[in-house]
Image (tube, rainbow, N blue to C red; front, side, top):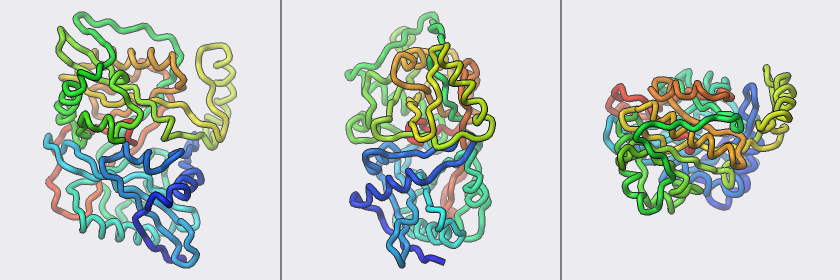
Length: 365
């Protein structure tokens, strides 16, 4: 069995990391690859304020065997802003997917945690990734405990179908202006504090890479009598993060030709051919005062109508199964997707989480 050594990845590894992402397919009814072109490290900035990317290398051949990311970000835990960790982008070449190799990888990660401890880590395992669920979520000996925190729905809303605007008495919806930045982020943070592990953002994140590609005018605001009561952003990341369809399975194998035939008669975008990219935008920075579903519905409809006039095929939303805003999505045709949210524990020092509804940022998955 090959012996692996683990190191902190450096910019010189960028091309090899991106090639590994292109080779690693996430299986499911629609098999996809998550790519980071033209720079892995530039794309990683949206996942955390500090991105630690690790590589596993075959000790004998020097070949890249896998990668994984430990992202540090400020977030709200039990209503208090603190730094937490986000574990993502775990990719392992098929020849190295042994239990021993994975255990060594987590031993390395445990050592990194000991040097720079964080109270909580979160991670999302896609619902179609049965291999990861069987190994990581099974709490096998030698691996840190994965504590289930429920399911996160990440449907891709199908753009192009006519949808009437939603008008609410006393509510005005308009794009944010640069002069409103401080007010907007103060509101987002106030509302995110009511969610569990929701990220904290600052105006500086518009310029330091953490909100790469997002402009203030991409953030739509709902105001009631001048008071800010809701935000939702249309975040296009195609310039640095892409989703490529690799194969269709299950019912999509026979449904795709029928669906694409329908697209020729409607404004709908056809499903891409294997190897082509899905043009997805993200509904991000979701924050609504008092969880007002009507305000969220009006904001989402505004985003949907605006995105339908752009180059995108789908609008991806992320809401936890307990989120009171989730029923709003039932008004849209969509390709259902999602994952299982976990907290990962490397020690017993973290206090228990209270009952707040978890929040996952769609644009940072």
